[in-house]
Amino acid sequence: MGNEATVYIIDDDVGVRESLSTVLVRADFKVDQFSSAKDFLDFYVPSLFGCILLDIRMPEMDGITLQSELIKLGCQLPIIFITGYADVPTAVHAVKKGAFEFIEKPVENRKLIDIVDSAFKLILEKECDLQKIQMLTKRERDIFHLLAEGVSNKTIAAQLNISVRTVEFHRKNILEKLGVNLISGLIKISKSISPTS
Image 1 (tube, rainbow, N blue to C red):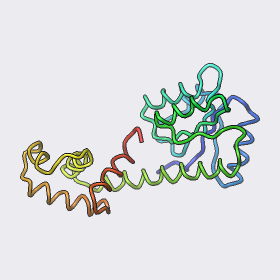
Image 2 (spheres, rainbow, N blue to C red):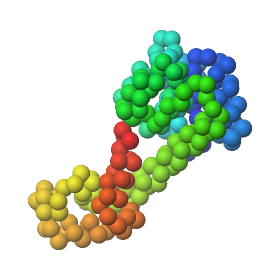
Image 3 (cartoon, rainbow, N blue to C red):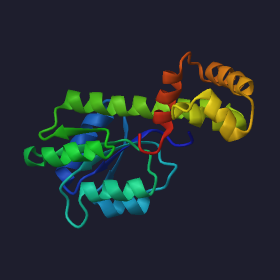
């Protein structure tokens, strides 16, 4: 993780940006501000590390459209939408598309800090899970993905042209390397590292 974790605030209202930034900086978060969705898209690179605080209603490109564009780019940053009362149904739809959370205006300072903190914990957990996956051999990664999809040992053996005993051996190693005891643990890690999680 070369980059310092940052909250990327995207809102066309300079007063809102400054207010959110002040609250977050006082809570020891690093903050970058953007006045439009286009400005952030121009700035975006896959190596960014942190979360996005995004207004739904903005001129030219709104927050929902930016979310869609970022999904196309494979962006892994958790998105927290800031919404007015009338935008709540839209925000709920955005969460179903993968947004981390939404906060209604006016934003309560404590709630804002708690949600941003939760988003940071999520990305750190994802980073940890990705590092664990890197410890697996190619064969183990292949079997990991199949196990996480609920494929049986017997079917995995047939698909990979290996014996069931070999699958069981790899399965044991995978569980140990990832620090989980059950297949449900593998599924949780698989969801954590998936681009849409």
